[in-house]
Figure 1 (cartoon, helix red, strand yellow):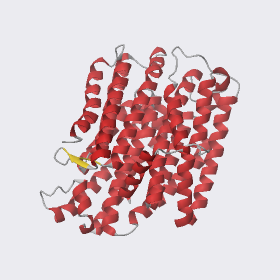
Figure 2 (tube, rainbow, N blue to C red):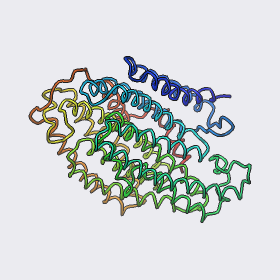
Figure 3 (cartoon, helix red, strand yellow):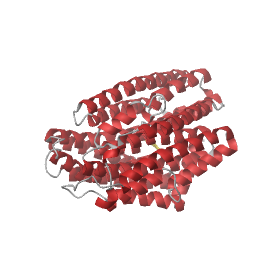
Figure 4 (tube, one colour):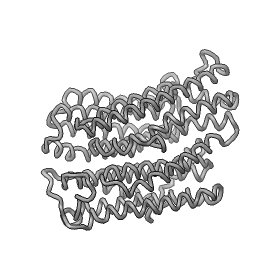
Amino acid sequence: MSGAFELALVLAIPFVTALLLGLVGHRRGAAEINAAGSLLTLLAAGMLTASVIRDGPMTLFDEQFFVDPLNVFMIALTAFVGLTTSLFSRPYMRVELDHGRLSAGRLRLYHSMYQMFMCTMLVALSTNNLGILWVAMETATLTTVLLVALYRTPASLEAAWKYFILCGVGIAQALFGTILIYFAAERVLGHEGGALLWTHLDAVKTQLEPTVLSLAFVFLFIGYGTKTGLVPLHNWLPDAHAEGPTPVSAVLSGLLLNVALYAIIRSKVLVDGALSSHFAGNLMIGFGLLTVVVPAFYLSRQKDIKRLFGYSSIEHMGIITFAFGMGGPVASYAGLLHMTVHSLTKSAIFFAVGHAAQKAGTQVIEDIRGLLKLSPVIGWELMIGTLAILGMPPFGVFTSEFMILTTAIKHYPWATPILLISLGVAFAAMFGKVQGMVFGKPTAQRLPHRPALIPVFLHLGLVLMLGMWIPPYLADWYRQAAKLIG
């Protein structure tokens, strides 16, 4: 069957690589195996994307998996960032090992759990079964708990427990929401009608009980919203970003938050059809705005550089949630574009931050100074990445935020001043802190291994390109996905 082989490769390669690295992840060459597995996953994702472009949406493996322009776009993005992060982690984790922050056993745990984390996200993105989606999200939580706690310091263990407890409670709410959807669908589809299969649910969504679906969405929104980092369920995110290894921070911020929001979007499509109202969208608009405002005013208080950009990730997930809440082709297009450029930019920033923190021997902002003099490349990477994530033209973040703001001016004018003020506050806070790190008096040191610089410039180059020109095939891709979202 067309697409089945490609999807099997996308899911099997990281799983097999994780098992292999569970045996040899501490040995010389493990980082190369990790990168090779990620490269093969990206190639398989490219093949799957080509199949979807050629043949259209497809259901696979007894309808348990489903691939369309929306999730195949996210699969490709996930595989790409997974590869570049594995390349970045190769020298980064060697420095951590040389500095005594990691043992060989923990390095093996890192490599194997990294690939297992990639596998769980790809399963969550490609499954057609809402039950498998929930299981994959829960498994992603468990793998990242182990990664966040990798250093075994009191702070990292506390962050891992906070992440586990908060996201565990949240995912339990998502389970209850999934059960409610099954309850509503079973009455329409019957016992053998695939009441948890999204494609079946989408076909009969107008027949589902509106009250049950609205209640289900509330639980699903709370559950997956916790994983997305939406306020007031965001408290785990800054700690997890600050205390885990920087490659973990990059994939948490650049990938996992997207996957959780994808689950909300799929649920919203069903609820919109069942209710024929804007209930789900209004909920997303309200919490999206709250998630933009609160982090903006927390940024100026941060002293840890990774916590600073963790709060920035919360803010941007609020912007994306707000965009999808507005709905419509332009807002959904802008939300998908912002999802893409945020993933690329924020992971690039964490790459630069990781090298900067290793040079200074600390993550404290006040103790990292003069990067431009000691290492001009890392200094410029951090400054350019910061300007890009703050929405300076001509980067892609500016383009997507401009589209979101102009749509808000047309349909929700009362929300526009809230967004503008929050973005202005965030700009002032983040730029003020980063410029001192880049242009101040040097306090850093040289690293024993050459840092991985290509992933940073590759990401920022793509973000710059997307701000000035979106390739026609990618623009069509976004339009098709936006049409599916509604």
